[in-house]
Length: 272
Ligand SMILES: O=C(O)CCC(=O)C(=O)O
Image (cartoon, rainbow, N blue to C red):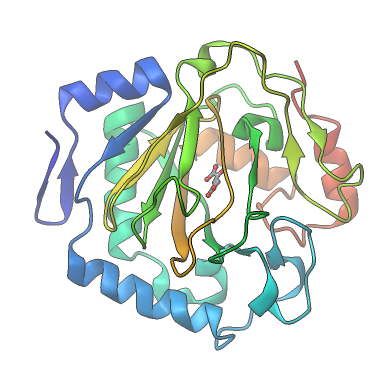
């Protein structure tokens, strides 16, 4: 079993092998209860609107709506929270995430972007469409990725936990299409499942994380619970060279990136 020693989490050989084989892995007790409490208090500031997040970087991930009262959003999405709350930069989840990324992917990893995704209780429509992350990103030579997905609440099938298609990272990236037909209105991409695809739901406890790579197919269902939010805090680590190439194109993972940049980047999306 992996374990914490001070400010590091030591990944077990078994978990490293699972990440290579499946494209995702579940790591338990990565943050302590106190560390998650501290993260939760900042998370709540975002949700109460006490931290200003401009434009599309605060949106409903399901509809693309932004700039309105977020209390009715099915999936409350904040892109780049560390940009809008600089005190978060270098926090314990970032530190531990980087060390996990290097243990899973090798040296030369860096934080690419962070994100909050909170599914409102009782929202069957809080569905995160099936996708492979690489379909959202530009094509680079060194695509190593470790996306660390922290459960701020227990994440269950009922409230819409992550589901993965193990081993799908060994396929090439499947064709994806904008879910609404127009990426200016709605950022989300979707790919079709095949009849023999068997998705595996991964239920995890508060303080646990899943880590997934750029190629594994994943998504999540709605939140059918009556009272339980499903809040996640995500830090995505990629190779230093990939992040350098992204920034050179003006690609920051902000949904406010200029449309011409998005268009340019869309031209580089991997579709096959
Ligand atoms: O939180 C979810 O349900 C989906 C998140 C996701 O797709 C990701 O972190 O890559």
